[in-house]
Length: 370
Ligand code: NAD
Ligand code: GLY
Image 1: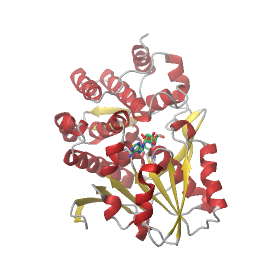
Image 2 (image 1 turned 45 degrees about the vertical axis):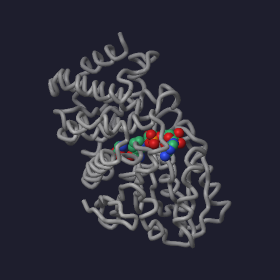
Image 3 (image 1 turned 90 degrees about the horizontal axis):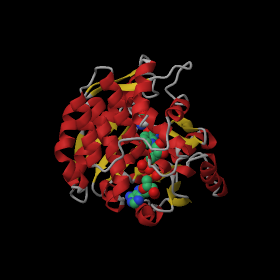
Image 4 (image 1 turned 180 degrees about the vertical axis):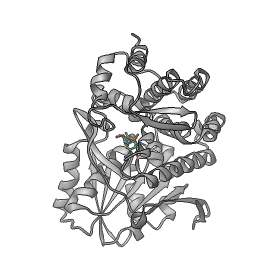
């Protein structure tokens, strides 16, 4: 990891995602939108910034200023997970075609994970592929969705079911953008930060327990460290297994349960990080029932999620059969066999097809209050 002193004097951290000729940098710090030479990642003279109705008024002008000399078009999507679908995607393609954009055009994703995933997929498929840059503006997108090249949209029958692996040219994480983020969305991002401690770094989990109050106050130093450590863990996992043939699946701790919750709720009411929070605690409880983590460790996980104000149980209206039906649509299901991410210990995880049906049923009954 490198630290460079940028023009504004504040240190910017740089992490590289190592994928051969498709390697790319993640710049992290305060003011990186101002201090990073974003234009160097725009090969042609034209670009299309994709944003949404919430983020565009806050940050589009700043991006425009940084790209002086380029021809900057923009498209503003409706805000929300329920618009992360093929209709939403069509708005991007229509803007590209109406604007006469060719294969030299660069797309810029300016927003949270919804905008980032959709822009990435549009970039992967417009005229069979144009370059794109991620400028993530939620904590969740800064530590997770902008890194690693998973792009796509939801289908009403399943979350993230249509998409592609397609890597950006660069990720510019400006922690200043988090100043305008709601408490609820900030907490949702913390769920994914906590995930990294659980799956890959027990010391980081302890650090999070000890520094959570600073993080909740959005202390700049604590925040930069938490984002940096999260991105480093994700970059390492992605470099080892870009297309999720194996180890990358651990990044989905709790997501099989979480995606079932999101699909059940029709992508409304709960935000992604909240569903992941409840799902991670379920995964931890399952891991304890299999004898891998202790009851005391599960209590620590419950406690840190609760301190963030995150949900720790699924929606009351959800029944065991809803989970079973929706979990079958998880992308980790192979040849009809469900695979789940479990914690082998606090700080290590693995994906397994060997969870006995009785353990899963017991977990679902207890989580659904049955
Ligand atoms: P989001 O994109 O819906 O953003 C959350 C809310 O915050 C939205 O209302 C948005 O407009 C608003 N917002 C964004 N930046 C803001 C800012 N700086 N100030 C004020 N408001 C701001 O949700 P998210 O949590 O960022 O991302 C969730 C999505 O990411 C889900 O669709 C999930 O599936 C996806 N995801 C993808 C990956 C991946 O690897 N590609 C990983 C994790 C999650
Ligand atoms: N968020 C899971 C992954 O990127 O693989």
